[in-house]
Amino acid sequence: MVFVRHLYLLICLILISYPGISQRQETVSSYIDRYKDTAKRHMVEYGIPASIKLAQAIIESGFGNSELAVNANNHFGIKCHGWQHATYYKDDDKRNECFRSYLSPVHSFEDHSEFLTTRQRYSFLFDLDPLDYKGWARGLREAGYATNPRYPQLLIRVIEEHELYRFDQKVMKGDRIAAGSPRLKDDHKRRPVDIFKEREIKVNNRIKYVYARQGDTPESIAEEMEMWAWQIYRYNELKEGTVFGEGDIVYLQPKRRRGEEDYHIVREGETMYDISQLYGVQLQHLYNRNNMEPGSDVKPGQKVVLRGRIRE
Image 1 (cartoon, helix red, strand yellow):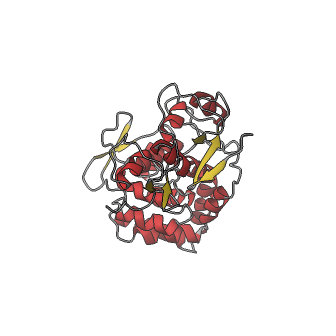
Image 2: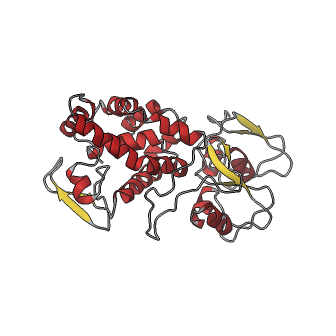
Image 3: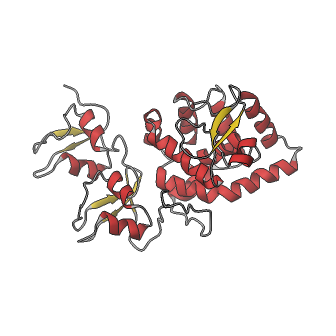
């Protein structure tokens, strides 16, 4: 997918950074103020740095002034590619290309997050430190997000010029996301995670989680945290009808591909799923790192690698 048009990026950069265009500069500030909470919320829910989200939107949409943004609420230049909903046609790399059209800009932000989190080629980005916006910028280019070789520099320049990294820092410090910011209303869309409920939110492997209480279910936790039940099922790799025990770890965000520790020594009664939950590592990647078939058992004293791969 081609997201960035070279000439358009150059124009956007001039509009954003040229000191003589004060009206445009204020427009950038207004755009950031309008969508900063959406970006922060997506950082909580999806793990995409708010700074990266905002910088991409600023560049791709000309801070909300591009033809796609104005006429199709498309702030990230995402083309149709099997899209079954409203569309918008305009010349791009080819004549009369098909782009996705959204009911609101917030739906565009949502679809962009879905795009990054559901495509394998971007998965390595979520192993980066959430505060490493430079790593994210370079990684997006390496993964093929943009054709412009200067795309990382453009993102970094926008982030640093407007100090967008401050939003990442606020999220990591548990900053309250302002009430009244745009929210999705469609039933088929995700509900944002409210990280300030009475139940204490903890962090493991840079993933937010809560401890279950006796009798909790994915449905009950999802309702309390203002999430969908399928998110709890998916993030924790659960089977339908699961009932939690007291003290079970319940992740509110997707687990990662590797752990913060190098390895784990299996204790009596532990399973690979237990280890997966303990360290916040996706079960499939845990099996892959240890050259094990999915569903294989582990034995007490066995070394389970959490980073890298086991050496035969």
